[in-house]
Structures are given as C-alpha cells and as structure tokens.
Length: 266
Image (cartoon, rainbow, N blue to C red; front, side, top):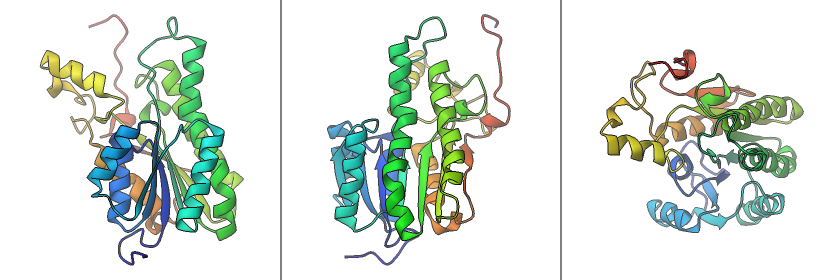
C-alpha cells in the first residue's frame, strides 16, 4: 500500500548505518514523511532496535550488510528495487571514527579500513544506485561527511581525510550525473551524540564535564541525531530540488571558525 501523505510520500530510500544514531533517526524521519525505507547496518541487534523504534512499520525493510563491500551493496540496491519497485533516495551514512590516532600512531591498515567504510562506502552505493535513478530521471543521493572534512582540528588525520573525500565525491558525482535529474549532496555534522561518539560522551560524563561538550561552537551545545536527520530529510525531499553538489554543515556554527588550541598549550 502506498502512503499518500508526507514530504517523501510514495518514495523509496536506502539508509546505511541505520542501526543507531544519525542513521536510525533518519530512518524514523523518512518513515514519518511517508517513505518506504530499506535500513542497513552491520549490527543486526542495532537494526532490530531501529525496527522496534519504528513500531515495526510495514514500510520498513531491514538488511544486515557491510557498507564498504561491493557485493553486499549491490545486493542492497537489488533488494530495494525488488521490494519497492524503484529507488528514489540513497543515504550513505555508515561510518567509523577509527579513534584519535595521530600521524605517528595510525597504521596504514586502520587508515585503509576507515577509507573503505567512510569513503568507498558512499561511492559504492552511488555507483550501484545510479543506473536505476538515471533510468527514472530523478533521485537524491545523500552522504554523511563531517565538519572535519571542511577544516582542520575536528578529527584525526584518517577520519578527516576520509570525510573530505566524501565532500569531494558529492561535488564530483553531481557533475558526473549532469542533466540526469539525480542530485548528490553531503551533510557535515558537528559533534553529535551517536554510537560512534559514545566514548567521548561516556568519558565526559565520568569526569562530570558533559556540560563542556560543544561549548566551542557559537550555539554552545552538542547536537542530536534528529537534527542531522532533518537536514537529510530536506535534501531527500523535493524541497531541495535546486540543491546539488553541496556540503551542508549542521554543526551549531563550529565550521564557521573551528576554534584552535596549540597542541601542548593550555
């Protein structure tokens, strides 16, 4: 049965990294606005929790998959086509932080794994979905980047480089898909409480310094997954029909300046 209400009524979407945080919030937002959603994550338990949060919606399908594995991503797109009869939206949200290892500590192996999930993952979803969207003459591809992609001092070298790749990918693919009706954009979150940032928040709470999180941005707070989901919802909707090849910061103003402290200085 097709839902006829909401900003995404009658549309179908794939959301990766849907087992927690921004991905889960985006699944819920897309469902709320009438979309049929294929939610994917490597964590089957997390997907189950997302399904429970959605009230076991009839418009939600879940599939365990590795966002950086070509065959699994191809299967994901094929499943969306088979289940929904088409594909209108992809949200390549899956990502890993890789920790805080600096230049002298990070291994090539870890750097490669961060790139595989964070950068190659969005590329694969775009590559596999593009022919289906082009055939329909429309579509919205969304990717999660980061404020760390825009300026220094918001992430480790590997994480920042992987997310800068996502911004470049969104810009480049927008032109690769020139004239097809398919739009490609990135969302650049600031500090958001998610499964990936849980260690930071847990440590702050143990120290009694949670109130300091996010204080260096002009809004003086950290963000919630739902606030990123609403930005993704906008980019997915027809309201963003003239937004293409952009990197949208949702960061409380952090990316306007990225306050900097000299390493080793108080």
